Image (cartoon, rainbow, N blue to C red; front, side, top):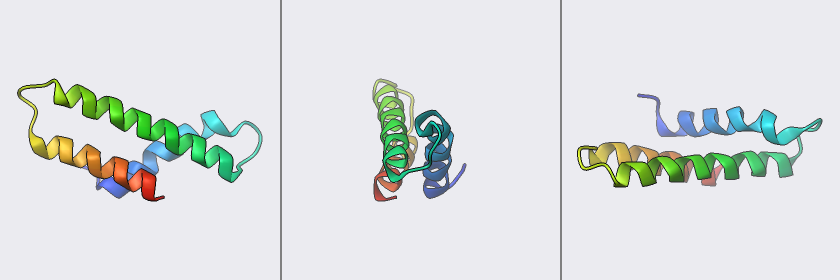
Length: 71
């Protein structure tokens, strides 16, 4: 599995083109980060409803979310 910081960077990069329009400003990066955090929140929420999901998976996605916020 990808390291949390690498996954965080990957998610932000994937959202960046959708948020950037014609420029690569800091505001657009912040929008991409917010979208990536929402994505993590949705994954964590789904994992919380799963009885068979391991805690390590939840911990992984929480670390990804933390890494995005720290960027």
